Length: 140
Image: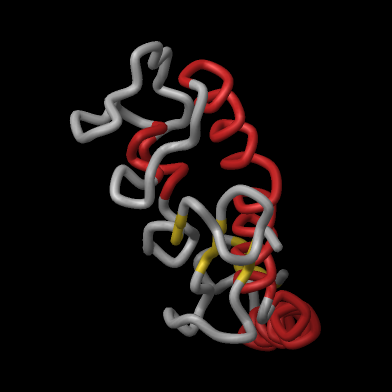
């Protein structure tokens, strides 16, 4: 710090430039490490939903009503009581929050009952690509 002509203290241009250089160097080291973490986090959330969270809610629904929701009723049956047949007689929901049936990419999880891959039902997230394929996150 130097004293200015008026007697006040202040930072010199070189001191300010040094701070900017140090912050830039730190940012250059840290930012590449954080890149891609957002997609990793989304995939982890979708895996937890598909393999644990939604199956737990579906099991509770099945215990209460004696069957899983139909494909037509979908996962929305976990949020509000279905009005379409077969209407559940002992619905004790909501079993999940409404945002829980939407994957991290903003699309509703795909649910099929009866399933062709899983023992009871198929549950999947279409992932970042948004279409069925090898990179989907599934329960089978």
